[in-house]
Length: 463
Image (cartoon, rainbow, N blue to C red):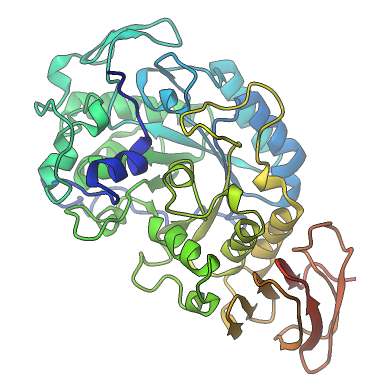
């Protein structure tokens, strides 16, 4: 039977019957390892993930959309040579560490990094280093391979001895030493393996990437991940680990914060509960019970969660857009805006042409909120108001946002902490300054907010 990689999150959901679990590990992460970088460095901290976009297309998006909107980072799908096939998950079964996948050549990758840098956007590379493939064949770059044999890279002894699928997510050993949906599991405790992975990451850094998203980090001991990072000769840059939380599991996201940031999957699940009929007021203290906000990368959805149903997706329409507005307005964590493609078949690969992409990163409501995030910085959350499927709050005296996810319009006087003046609604669907709002000398604003819409004002967008 064909084995397929559904990436760490979906694979874990399947293996654990709904939630990820994880296996025993060897040791605590080494505190002397390279210190964590609490969020992407710089004033522009918003990331856009352009899932499965060809590198040439990403370069164009950096120039046309991401740079002008104020995104600081773009995360791109794996560059390494991988198994052949049209499904999206083929990108997550590496054959070698050559840049020779379906998204483009080494030259395409280098050109993309340069174009994005010129647009003021830094590139984060999605690195698949926990495992290799589930079978044999010839890779997208022409490299022959077998499940435990990868020409010039790895041989049988470089893989863990557990040659079966993960069966018990309450066992650390099972999760971190056995096989994720049949994929050859690298022995990341081996100095040879660590060196090969570090060499690949160094190569990507030499091409100008600003850092990495480490796929399936949960399936490697945190000490191993730290050791790989420490073994690099280049400065590792920004670092975020994919570690999906699951209640009662042996491996938890908090274990990886000494290595870098961690993707906070509980965040997207909480947004789904609130925006699909719950009380938006529950989002006031969003982040409680999750990672410390300085280590949490937050998102509404990603390619796994949009397929396994654990979060909102583009198919949720206005609620999805409003959740992304909230993501960029609320101070918790470092926001990552996901932008993929439309699908009916969960295995389907990316569009071959210019149509079929969701374009979530380029929606006026979202690009306006990237500017909002940059403008409010670390300003505190104040002036909270909520009622059912509506909420509003200020970000100190720098910004104000109101969301109406209900079925009828809201007409009320909101309290803000903004200086008096005429402000542009940067979260409007039409973009620009098509909608203006007056804030009085007392900080109040009379607003009519249509159903399924948002209002966002900040001090850098005034008339």
